[in-house]
Image (cartoon, rainbow, N blue to C red; front, side, top):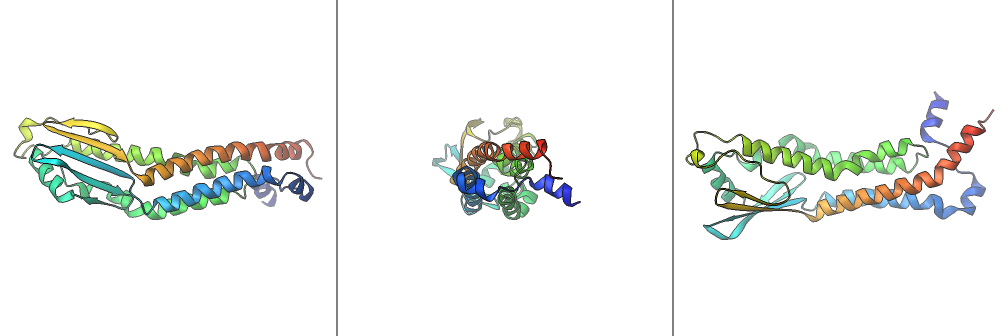
Length: 221
C-alpha cells in the first residue's frame, strides 16, 4: 500500500537538487497556486451576461449570471419570455447553482493538491479546473437550448415564434429581438486559471519527469 502511494505521489526532490535548481521546482507550484486563487476569486464575480434588445426597450434589458444566481432585469425578460412560452430564467440550472460554490472550492483544492504530487497524476488532479470554463459554457448552452426548444404551445405568441437555440456567446436573433451574450470577469479569471494550469503542467513535467525516469531506471532496493 505504501509503495502504491509513493508511486501516486511521485519522487521527492533531493535536498541538493532543490538547492541547485530551486526555481525549476518552485515555478509549477506558483502557477498552480495562482490558478487556485483566481478560481476562488471568480466565485464572487459575474461569469456571464446577456443583453436583450427589444423595440420597447431601446436601452436593452440585461441579466448577469454568477455561479450561484442571476440578477438584473430578470423580471422584465421573464415577462417577455412568457409571451413566447419560455420558462422563467430562475428555473434553469438549479442543481448546478446549488453546488457551484462548493464545486469550485473542491476544484481549487484539487489544484493545490497537485502541487504535492510529482507524478503524472498531477495532471488528473488539475483536469477539472483546466476544463471548468468549457464545462460552464457547455452547461449554460444546454440550458439555453433546453429553454428555447421547449416553448409552451399555449403561450399568447407561440404561433409566431419557432423553437430556437440562443447562442451562449456573441449575438443571436429571436423574432424581432436581438441578444448579445458576453463572458463576465469571473469567467475570464477561470480561463486565465486554465492557461496557468497548462503552463504549470508543462513546467511540472519538465521538473519532475527526469526524477521519475531516474527512479524507474534505478529503483530503490
